[in-house]
Length: 322
Image (cartoon, rainbow, N blue to C red; front, top):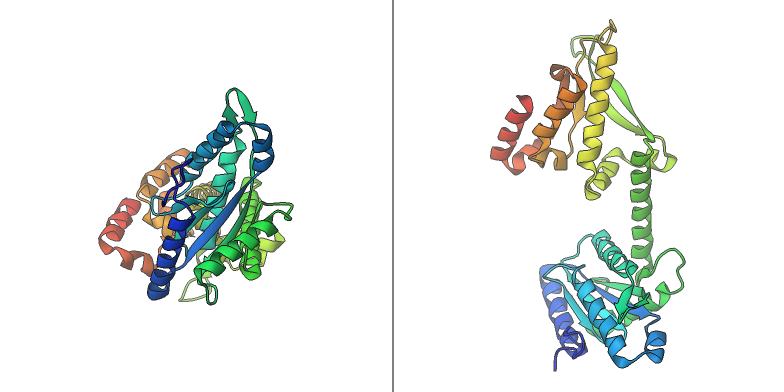
């Protein structure tokens, strides 16, 4: 009564009960969740010219693939012949919803193989989130269905949020993420060394290494915001290593420069970098490979990073210093 006979997934009845529970819990504990509605296309066309067993094999394979895209706490259901739903609890960052969509699209890149015949299936995905004004189970399902229908008319992607503002915000975030990836891949950035004078006078005391982006869009964004995006994309370690390597190369060129040869350079660490236990070992390799003068480099570490876990922070600082 609660499970689909073909895929073994939950059916519409069970999904309705779960949505009611999630609405009550999310309202009580101020948490967000997302509902994805996924339509397989051209499934109806495929079933009209093939046997029922072929269609069921495709559905079973898709159910297996889609379950590989979600967490153990997420729920996958089949509510119609070619329509599935995913319930994603505790979704505070809507970019994580898009990551699930990307995983589903990746799974659909491989054709479905049935009795030696390949079938290519695409999808249209509608997304509704809670809370987004006053919502009921019925409205959540209706709005995800409307968003799914709207996604069919979008050229560059196969998903759509019901809320236009969220949809627009997500698109802007994805554009920034793509710009950052492209800028790093194409090395469209420079490291500028900002002078910091001595507190006792106008003498140059040290330099701080800061990133300057060539992209006009990235130049207009707060550097802290860009760092947050880099961390969200899991690129902070890679980019941090590139930055430190570049600093050591610059110090090597400065060793005969009268003004700069004895001036230390400060490099700011992000939270993700500082909390990475492999950081000291990676930095040791960079120093060895670049013949870097480690004593000429300082690391800027925010106090908030240390207060999160003082014992680990002290150990990490000692390892970095050594």
